Image 1 (cartoon, rainbow, N blue to C red):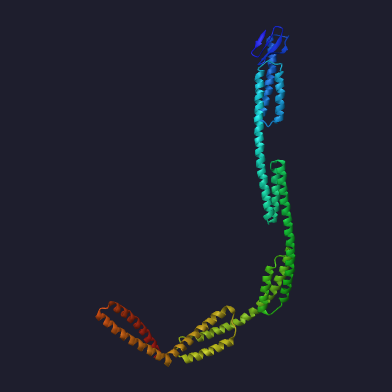
Image 2 (image 1 turned 90 degrees about the vertical axis):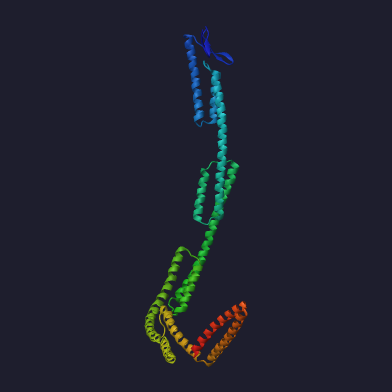
Length: 409
């Protein structure tokens, strides 16, 4: 009889394997030595070990489906239980039990991962739907909005699926947002088309008016009319691109015709006005020799002659008008100021008033000087101070009054 830690061969050639439940027959061997029998049945055991090793490796390192792994474990368990092999069959059974536990843990991990993926997928799809609804309600940049909605649909397709009720409800909201955006965009462009048609009609009217005015020679009122037409043009809105370009070309052409003609007339007029300006420059040189005024009567007569010739010359260019008129006004003011000063100086009533004011101030000063002297003698410091201040003011007034009187003398 030959023995092994996990089996034996008896004298009649029967081969046994030892298990926790006791020995059981796994075969018989009549063709050779008992050691050869044990070696043969150990090789069968090694084959089982190899299968278990491979299964364990696949479970741990690949994404082997749980159902397939369970089927393989069950098959191997049956093979180990009924194995005609010699070896640690109980150990192999325990390894299969461990793989069953590992598979259960992996199944639970996969379930948690799937649950997390569903939660994340739901969050992603809720974000997609929320953005789509915002675009549907707020976006007015239609091209960008439509393109973004298409991108959101692709993002939806790429995201993991969630449970069917949630998936269905969210997809309905996404579809509704897209439909709502499409309807709002169609309504906008439909309304825009109406507005453009209305703008085209209004601008055709403005073009007709502009063209009717293009030959006018009533320069001022017509220029004002064109400004008003331009104001209305800006308020009218935009027609379609082709119509807008055609109408604007006609409108601008009418304006250009009028303003070109006006510019030609004004250029001719400005040349004539420039000669007027040169003549007035000469008059100003003559007028400025009157200042400072020495002989009021002669200056007044000379200025009157200059003013009459000034008016007779006529208009000057617009950009010279204020400068020339300003220089003449200064001369007129100088002559007028000299006349007023002479009138005040020779006015008897003014001189009488000035003399009375001087006499009154002198009398007042004499009275204050007397009071001051008495206050000093009496030692009344407050009265001294008050009288000194009053005297200072009266003397200043007297100096001014005497100056005025001297001018009138």
